[in-house]
Length: 70
Image 1: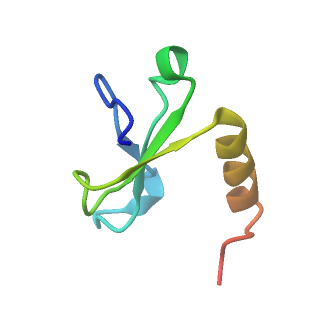
Image 2 (image 1 turned 180 degrees about the vertical axis):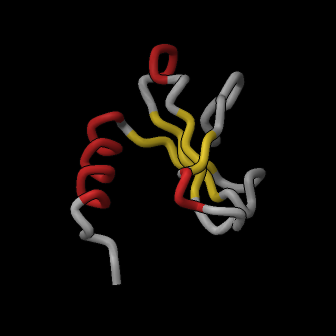
């Protein structure tokens, strides 16, 4: 099931540069939906992930600590 994206304000990381190889996130729908939406910036019309705020914060903390670097 695709989450309702009505009114979603998508944003990319400022570190993404001019490329389109990153994800976009919409957090402005937290109040009505209780979810953070994430999509692929290269294919914005494809699947959207719906993530709980707690899981999103855990991901951001892990990424900030370098857990996902190669």
